[in-house]
Image (cartoon, helix red, strand yellow):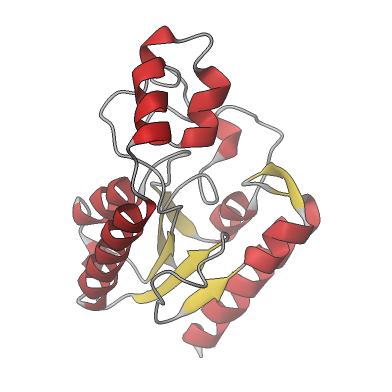
Length: 199
């Protein structure tokens, strides 16, 4: 089965940087022909770009892991641009605060978040991109599942939505932010859905 994965760090291949951090995308890749475009730290806009630059018709299944609405798109992240896992990261406040001391050029971005960033606007734009993604993948013959691991209660509601937020709250770890038990659970949940498609 040909599977396309798009998304953020909840779906990225952590073994690019940490060979021992096998997550659910790696388990899926052992069983199927997987193209994983997910990038750690990317915004919903970059997830949209991952999908728009693919021929979606060539895949049997598309899995899209959606991200936080509070990531601000950037073409260059001074703290992560040369990192093999986080090289395409966008700005998010908590990460900026962690790296601002070592990257003085981030001070102005931190100030923007603290003084000017509008959460309502960010949520509005995020929901628009989510809606655009959902409408785009509907045109593909592939079976599509939208995956969230953050609190999406007041955000866009997807069709074919897999919500792993409760699992994220209870089973955090080093591979795709989940421990080994959670990664196995996610893999088996997705595999069951794939098996249903085959019948």
